[in-house]
Image (cartoon, rainbow, N blue to C red; front, top):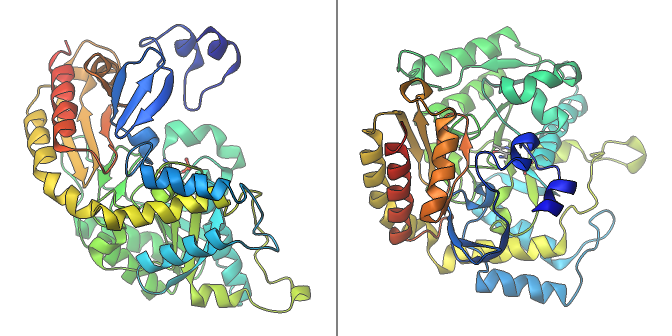
Length: 434
Ligand code: PMP
């Protein structure tokens, strides 16, 4: 730990706390085993946030491990700029097979934020190529989080993360979030859609795309939108004649109980952004997938310069692509979504109990995306959600909070016994807050 503290700068971390062991000594993870993490002293912890929301089938899954090893025996990396390789092709085919009809062209990147940048540039450039160069404005949601690169932050809306970078950002327009109001009420479907309609009316003819996290705004604290919202936004985009970008970096690959969140409303966006679970949480990979219509606009002679001027060194990396193909196969072989549905009542029962604990003001959930919001004014402990995440470690659970929200984002492979541990450890820690 002394060596860590001497050299590393951890993401989204107040390093002054980290080096002083606040709120507690940091864990050093040396191994994984199914849904568990193992620290340097051999202690085992349930991976309650799926290693930052990305692990789907557990750690060291035999078939994903062997797919990567197999690829390693062939080649670890080759480029998609001017060359191709079988695993990128297989991965793209497998992704297109899973996605709603019409999303058929896959552009690989390395992380969620980059894939969002690609979506924004694709949309902007699409309208230039279509002869509507005034469509340069992006409508996104209040409290949105799409990653930490400048374009992604520009369409973001979490002041704590984003405000300081204001001078670097391009302007946009925000539509309302589903966040709970101070009086405890939540906006209705009609209110949310009229807010989006108003944002589109104010920018009519200038909108390049509407960008949303469909169904659940993750980093905003697992804010859940009512059914019908995504369909409503799709219809509004069609009326305005603009593109819909759905960022499924967090919601995609089974998180919400369906393979993609847009399926709950039976909707297809013009561009979908995928990341995190795309490799089962094994290797950095993301994808921006669009329709034949958007793709076709970029076709022409090389010297016309219509092609998409964007790419990353490790776009479509073969090891990551092998992990992606294997991950998608495991959804089939282990019937992951069916198994989640079987365990759903176990999760629901624990949350029902937790919702009655004193400091809990709201419990939000869609599939295996859970936010337990605490009211910090009801307890003396400062930063109570952080304290809860620290306390559950004593019971062998790793969690990470978002502000006042305790988050559960377990691997989709979590068993009912493990859900019991997650539930009882969290309830105990919240109950112990003073
Ligand atoms: N979009 C959403 C909805 C996310 O939740 C995240 C990450 N939490 C990102 C984009 C950014 O992904 P990455 O951290 O891989 O850049």
